[in-house]
Length: 238
Image (tube, rainbow, N blue to C red):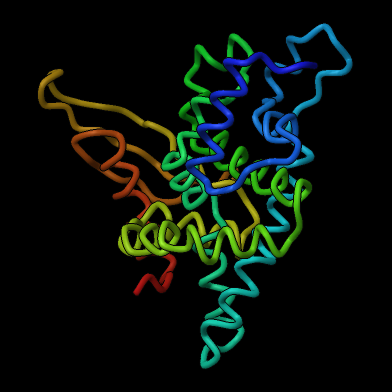
Protein backbone atom coordinates (compact mmCIF):
# COMPACT_ATOMS: atom_id res chain seq x y z
CA UNK A 1 0.00 0.00 0.00
CA UNK A 2 1.58 3.24 -1.21
CA UNK A 3 1.79 5.95 1.44
CA UNK A 4 0.28 9.37 0.81
CA UNK A 5 2.57 12.40 0.87
CA UNK A 6 0.81 13.80 3.94
CA UNK A 7 1.46 10.54 5.80
CA UNK A 8 5.10 10.50 4.70
CA UNK A 9 5.49 14.06 6.01
CA UNK A 10 4.11 13.03 9.41
CA UNK A 11 6.45 10.05 9.54
CA UNK A 12 9.43 12.20 8.53
CA UNK A 13 8.63 14.57 11.41
CA UNK A 14 8.67 11.61 13.79
CA UNK A 15 12.06 10.53 12.39
CA UNK A 16 13.34 13.97 13.36
CA UNK A 17 11.96 13.60 16.89
CA UNK A 18 13.46 10.16 17.50
CA UNK A 19 16.75 10.82 15.69
CA UNK A 20 16.59 7.97 13.20
CA UNK A 21 15.88 8.02 9.44
CA UNK A 22 14.36 4.89 7.92
CA UNK A 23 15.60 3.25 4.78
CA UNK A 24 12.11 1.73 4.41
CA UNK A 25 9.50 4.31 5.45
CA UNK A 26 6.71 1.74 5.09
CA UNK A 27 8.28 -0.25 7.92
CA UNK A 28 7.92 2.81 10.15
CA UNK A 29 4.28 3.22 9.10
CA UNK A 30 3.66 -0.45 9.89
CA UNK A 31 4.53 0.18 13.57
CA UNK A 32 1.30 2.22 13.87
CA UNK A 33 -1.14 -0.33 12.42
CA UNK A 34 -3.43 -1.05 15.38
CA UNK A 35 -5.38 -4.31 15.49
CA UNK A 36 -8.70 -2.40 15.64
CA UNK A 37 -8.10 -1.02 12.14
CA UNK A 38 -7.19 -4.46 10.84
CA UNK A 39 -10.48 -5.84 12.15
CA UNK A 40 -12.37 -3.17 10.17
CA UNK A 41 -10.32 -3.57 7.00
CA UNK A 42 -11.67 -5.64 4.14
CA UNK A 43 -8.18 -6.39 2.84
CA UNK A 44 -6.29 -9.47 3.97
CA UNK A 45 -3.07 -7.60 3.17
CA UNK A 46 -3.60 -5.13 6.02
CA UNK A 47 -1.68 -6.49 9.01
CA UNK A 48 -1.44 -5.21 12.60
CA UNK A 49 1.69 -4.25 14.51
CA UNK A 50 1.21 -6.98 17.16
CA UNK A 51 4.12 -9.11 15.92
CA UNK A 52 6.33 -6.00 16.02
CA UNK A 53 5.23 -5.38 19.62
CA UNK A 54 6.37 -8.89 20.55
CA UNK A 55 9.77 -8.37 18.95
CA UNK A 56 10.18 -4.85 20.35
CA UNK A 57 9.49 -6.04 23.90
CA UNK A 58 12.31 -8.59 23.64
CA UNK A 59 14.72 -6.09 22.07
CA UNK A 60 14.09 -3.43 24.73
CA UNK A 61 14.55 -6.04 27.45
CA UNK A 62 17.94 -6.96 25.99
CA UNK A 63 18.96 -3.31 25.54
CA UNK A 64 18.29 -2.37 29.16
CA UNK A 65 19.74 -5.62 30.53
CA UNK A 66 22.99 -4.86 28.70
CA UNK A 67 22.93 -1.17 29.61
CA UNK A 68 22.44 -1.72 33.36
CA UNK A 69 24.91 -4.63 33.35
CA UNK A 70 27.62 -2.32 31.97
CA UNK A 71 26.65 0.78 33.96
CA UNK A 72 26.19 -0.75 37.42
CA UNK A 73 29.08 -3.17 37.87
CA UNK A 74 28.59 -3.15 41.64
CA UNK A 75 24.92 -4.23 41.62
CA UNK A 76 23.85 -7.85 42.03
CA UNK A 77 21.35 -9.72 39.86
CA UNK A 78 18.38 -8.78 42.02
CA UNK A 79 19.04 -5.03 41.84
CA UNK A 80 19.74 -5.18 38.09
CA UNK A 81 16.48 -7.07 37.55
CA UNK A 82 14.57 -4.48 39.57
CA UNK A 83 16.09 -1.61 37.57
CA UNK A 84 15.29 -3.29 34.27
CA UNK A 85 11.71 -4.04 35.27
CA UNK A 86 11.17 -0.41 36.27
CA UNK A 87 12.03 0.91 32.79
CA UNK A 88 10.63 -1.93 30.66
CA UNK A 89 7.04 -1.56 31.83
CA UNK A 90 3.85 -0.09 30.42
CA UNK A 91 4.11 3.17 32.36
CA UNK A 92 7.68 3.79 31.22
CA UNK A 93 7.03 3.07 27.55
CA UNK A 94 3.82 5.12 27.68
CA UNK A 95 5.80 8.04 29.13
CA UNK A 96 8.32 7.90 26.29
CA UNK A 97 5.65 7.31 23.64
CA UNK A 98 3.79 10.38 24.87
CA UNK A 99 7.01 12.43 24.64
CA UNK A 100 7.43 11.42 20.99
CA UNK A 101 3.70 12.01 20.27
CA UNK A 102 3.24 8.51 18.90
CA UNK A 103 -0.51 8.60 19.50
CA UNK A 104 -0.93 11.17 16.73
CA UNK A 105 0.32 8.66 14.17
CA UNK A 106 -1.75 5.64 15.20
CA UNK A 107 -4.01 4.11 12.56
CA UNK A 108 -7.05 3.03 14.57
CA UNK A 109 -10.46 1.59 13.90
CA UNK A 110 -13.37 4.01 14.29
CA UNK A 111 -14.56 2.49 17.55
CA UNK A 112 -11.10 2.47 19.10
CA UNK A 113 -10.50 6.07 18.06
CA UNK A 114 -13.82 7.18 19.57
CA UNK A 115 -13.13 5.41 22.87
CA UNK A 116 -9.82 7.25 23.39
CA UNK A 117 -7.43 4.62 22.03
CA UNK A 118 -5.04 7.29 20.79
CA UNK A 119 -4.25 8.23 24.40
CA UNK A 120 -4.57 4.80 26.04
CA UNK A 121 -1.44 3.91 28.02
CA UNK A 122 -1.39 0.25 26.98
CA UNK A 123 -1.77 1.15 23.30
CA UNK A 124 0.98 3.77 23.41
CA UNK A 125 3.29 1.40 25.28
CA UNK A 126 2.70 -1.32 22.68
CA UNK A 127 3.28 1.19 19.88
CA UNK A 128 6.64 2.21 21.32
CA UNK A 129 7.67 -1.46 21.38
CA UNK A 130 6.55 -1.82 17.75
CA UNK A 131 8.51 1.30 16.80
CA UNK A 132 11.72 -0.07 18.32
CA UNK A 133 11.19 -3.36 16.48
CA UNK A 134 10.74 -1.51 13.20
CA UNK A 135 14.02 0.35 13.76
CA UNK A 136 15.72 -2.96 14.55
CA UNK A 137 14.42 -4.54 11.34
CA UNK A 138 15.43 -1.48 9.33
CA UNK A 139 18.95 -1.44 10.83
CA UNK A 140 20.36 -3.57 13.65
CA UNK A 141 20.35 -4.24 17.38
CA UNK A 142 23.43 -2.01 17.76
CA UNK A 143 21.57 0.94 16.25
CA UNK A 144 18.61 0.47 18.65
CA UNK A 145 21.02 0.11 21.58
CA UNK A 146 22.81 3.37 20.74
CA UNK A 147 19.56 5.19 20.08
CA UNK A 148 18.17 4.22 23.49
CA UNK A 149 21.32 4.45 25.61
CA UNK A 150 22.95 7.49 24.00
CA UNK A 151 20.17 9.66 22.55
CA UNK A 152 17.18 8.93 24.77
CA UNK A 153 18.41 7.43 28.05
CA UNK A 154 17.67 10.77 29.73
CA UNK A 155 13.96 10.26 29.08
CA UNK A 156 13.98 6.92 30.85
CA UNK A 157 16.00 8.31 33.75
CA UNK A 158 13.56 11.21 34.07
CA UNK A 159 10.73 8.69 34.17
CA UNK A 160 12.50 6.82 36.99
CA UNK A 161 12.91 10.06 38.93
CA UNK A 162 9.28 11.13 38.52
CA UNK A 163 7.97 7.64 39.29
CA UNK A 164 10.10 7.03 42.41
CA UNK A 165 7.02 7.73 44.54
CA UNK A 166 4.48 6.78 41.88
CA UNK A 167 2.75 4.02 43.78
CA UNK A 168 0.80 2.78 40.75
CA UNK A 169 4.04 2.29 38.82
CA UNK A 170 5.74 0.53 41.74
CA UNK A 171 2.79 -1.81 42.28
CA UNK A 172 2.49 -2.55 38.56
CA UNK A 173 6.16 -3.52 38.36
CA UNK A 174 5.70 -5.84 41.33
CA UNK A 175 2.51 -7.47 40.02
CA UNK A 176 3.99 -8.02 36.56
CA UNK A 177 7.25 -9.40 37.95
CA UNK A 178 6.00 -11.54 40.84
CA UNK A 179 2.42 -12.45 39.97
CA UNK A 180 2.52 -12.35 36.15
CA UNK A 181 -0.96 -10.82 36.27
CA UNK A 182 -2.59 -7.65 34.99
CA UNK A 183 -3.04 -4.79 37.46
CA UNK A 184 -6.32 -2.90 37.06
CA UNK A 185 -8.39 -0.41 39.04
CA UNK A 186 -12.16 -0.38 39.47
CA UNK A 187 -14.22 2.61 40.59
CA UNK A 188 -16.36 1.40 43.48
CA UNK A 189 -18.34 4.57 44.13
CA UNK A 190 -18.25 8.35 44.45
CA UNK A 191 -19.94 10.59 46.98
CA UNK A 192 -20.61 14.30 47.41
CA UNK A 193 -21.69 17.11 45.08
CA UNK A 194 -20.16 17.50 41.61
CA UNK A 195 -17.80 20.27 42.73
CA UNK A 196 -16.50 18.31 45.72
CA UNK A 197 -16.67 14.58 45.02
CA UNK A 198 -14.80 11.80 46.83
CA UNK A 199 -13.88 8.71 44.81
CA UNK A 200 -13.38 5.14 46.08
CA UNK A 201 -11.28 2.80 43.93
CA UNK A 202 -10.07 -0.80 44.44
CA UNK A 203 -6.91 -2.25 42.89
CA UNK A 204 -7.09 -5.72 41.33
CA UNK A 205 -4.39 -8.27 40.52
CA UNK A 206 -6.06 -10.34 37.83
CA UNK A 207 -9.50 -11.01 39.32
CA UNK A 208 -8.31 -10.72 42.93
CA UNK A 209 -9.25 -7.56 44.84
CA UNK A 210 -6.37 -5.89 46.66
CA UNK A 211 -6.78 -2.67 48.67
CA UNK A 212 -9.14 0.27 48.32
CA UNK A 213 -8.07 3.90 47.95
CA UNK A 214 -9.77 7.27 48.39
CA UNK A 215 -9.19 10.55 46.59
CA UNK A 216 -10.68 13.77 45.26
CA UNK A 217 -10.39 12.37 41.74
CA UNK A 218 -9.99 8.89 40.26
CA UNK A 219 -6.24 9.26 39.74
CA UNK A 220 -5.68 10.18 43.38
CA UNK A 221 -7.87 7.29 44.49
CA UNK A 222 -5.91 4.86 42.30
CA UNK A 223 -2.60 6.09 43.72
CA UNK A 224 -3.99 5.69 47.24
CA UNK A 225 -5.21 2.16 46.47
CA UNK A 226 -1.77 1.28 45.10
CA UNK A 227 -0.04 2.79 48.15
CA UNK A 228 -2.30 0.88 50.56
CA UNK A 229 -1.63 -2.36 48.66
CA UNK A 230 2.13 -1.77 48.71
CA UNK A 231 2.04 -1.24 52.48
CA UNK A 232 -0.20 -4.28 53.03
CA UNK A 233 2.02 -6.55 50.93
CA UNK A 234 5.24 -5.15 52.38
CA UNK A 235 6.67 -4.20 48.98
CA UNK A 236 9.98 -2.32 49.06
CA UNK A 237 9.49 1.06 47.40
CA UNK A 238 12.49 2.97 48.71
